[in-house]
Length: 165
Image 1: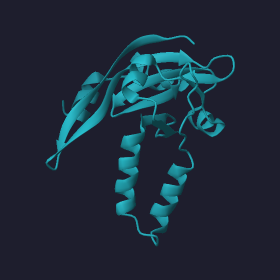
Image 2: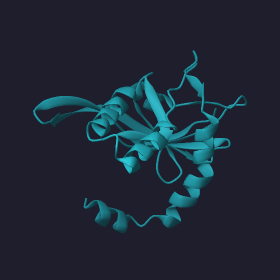
Image 3: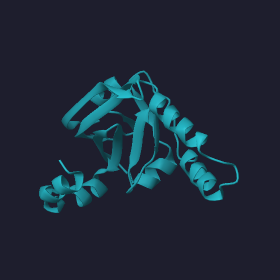
Image 4: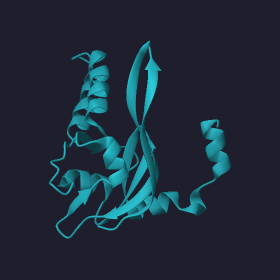
């Protein structure tokens, strides 16, 4: 597996409705490739903060999301609290999300095999980009990522204005 790039990951404490919560936080980009047997690993700095208990699921815009299991369970619980059985559209959305969730089985070297369905969703064949996006890691096909986020396609003034930073 080949790695390059810079990644910063850490945990932050937030105060939410008078309760302190430890939250996963990650920024940066790193590139890796599937090995010859189709196995992958989360980049080491990201994996150290993510921990061994995490989920991978279909994200938006042809990428995959990776989050700590605890964070995923909390989000899933929040969703379920507002979901009625007769809400067909929300039930269908929950089923679609659930059908893409993978809890990876990690080997002794930290590798796992990504489900074929998830590889297809993200158009991953060999090379991948791991992007820390605050409370999640995104996994992109290198080809899709580079086409979408090449320096020619980034207008930082627009980014700053959109995010109001």
